[in-house]
Image (cartoon, rainbow, N blue to C red; front, top):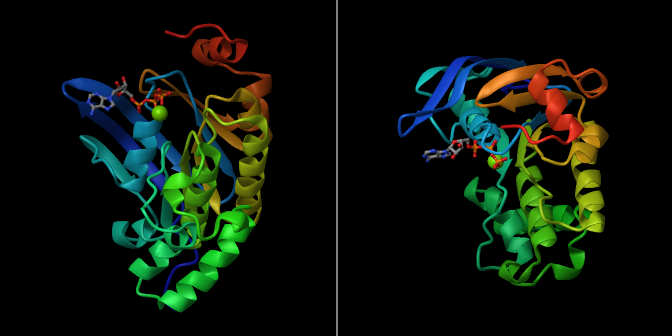
Length: 240
Ligand SMILES: Nc1ncnc2c1ncn2[C@@H]1O[C@H](COP(=O)(O)OP(=O)(O)OP(=O)(O)O)[C@@H](O)[C@H]1O
Ligand SMILES: [Mg+2]
């Protein structure tokens, strides 16, 4: 194969996103490497979801650029994105997970075999043949993560994957994501859960009002936040 070993580094340069006259992201400059676990934090409305969507190519920047080390098209095919509320297709759990491989023209038998592995890995083996629309919120997140990982992406984007889940589901999902990351998948994740960010992040990007306030190794960020907004956020103050 002539494929490059990684689509990283990702270089976001002078990125500005506007919607309906409002500036959502402003002059973002950010370089992310293949290694590590990047957590994007910041108050509601600070632009976290938008940043992930632009990096993945779901939204176009008004100004500036998002560049991978390979063409945008190649890069896109090596990324998976798990939405905050994943869409379940009206078919079995197994076929939901197999779907990305079917789209890539793998045989149904091969796709299902691989899907079976991922369904088991994320702990949904008991629900293999269940209509995916019957799954609980936590189970849907696990399915969506399996559906992302089945493509062996270079990067898995996760937008608040554990909001509203109970402790056990959070722990299980964190373990799945951490395992994928330690096997080489870059993870870029948003979360409001400070404890979760401390458990998982190797680096933190902190956004406030559409601007990057900090981009630092996680340990530094949590021990010595520098920006007033991050300090307040970590203290639990209301950041406006
Ligand atoms: N289509 C749109 N039109 C206008 N404004 C939008 C649109 N989509 C998002 N916004 C605004 O952009 C800002 C950033 O939204 P975004 O969803 O990226 O924030 P976030 O940091 O992910 O917030 P949260 O923590 O609530 O998920 C918000 O003020 C939001 O209202
Ligand atoms: Mg969001």
